[in-house]
Structures are given as C-alpha cells and as structure tokens.
Image (cartoon, rainbow, N blue to C red; front, side, top):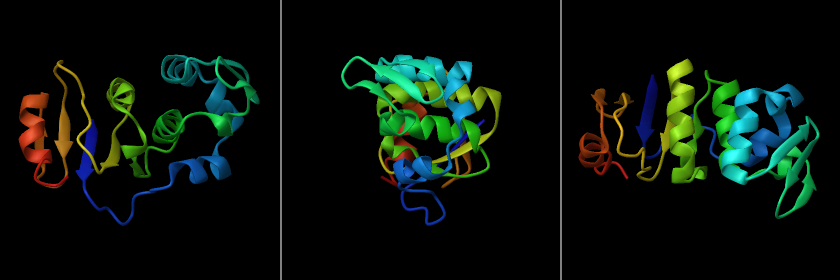
Length: 145
C-alpha cells in the first residue's frame, strides 16, 4: 500500500539526488522495472549498469538521470526509508502506485500529485484515512500542502 505524509516530515530524505549518488547500486539500474521507468520518464535506454543512452544528453551515468527517476528507483529499492517524492512530476505517479502494489511504501509529498482518474488505495498518514480517488484525496491533502 502507498502511504503518504503531506507537508513537513523531518525524517524524510529531502535531497534525493545527492542521496542517490552516494548509495545506488548498479543492479538497481539494470532491474527490469527500473529500465521501464527510465525509458518512460526520461525516454532513455539502459545499455548496462554504467551507461544510459539519453536522446538529449547522449551516453550518461545513472547519476545523470532525472530527479524523478532517481527518486522512484530509491523508493523501490529502499522501501523502509521515506523519500520526498516532490522531486517527481505527475508522470511518476503511476510508477509510485505500481511500486506500492508490490510492497508497502511511504513517501513524503509537499505538493498535490495527480494520481490520475483510476481507482487506487492510498493511506494519508496525516489523518490515517484511506482514499480511493483524486476526488477523495484532494480535499484532505489540500489541508496540508
């Protein structure tokens, strides 16, 4: 399940790019789901653990991926930690939901992310309420961001 804490959360890892640079492992990049996320979000292809082919930047290391993709990879590989997912754009929302289908995760958001028109299950930790649509999510999250 996806758990979200809106607003200030002192224990959340805020600077996900710096954190990623210092802890990521090569096998995180070559994971099938990571490859899909990188292709979808950054439009880039993983050639191997140390080289990603970006249509904009050319051949790059994993540390040059977008902040959103790096945050998604961290959320997937360190589910016991809380990351500030405000580094992610709305294009990352579907991936956050997919990761949460596979394992329980908690993220911190300081903005209102659009999780789409579908049905989902998200626990808002600020109120301990579970919501199933953006229509239910917006009024609650709006109090905190």
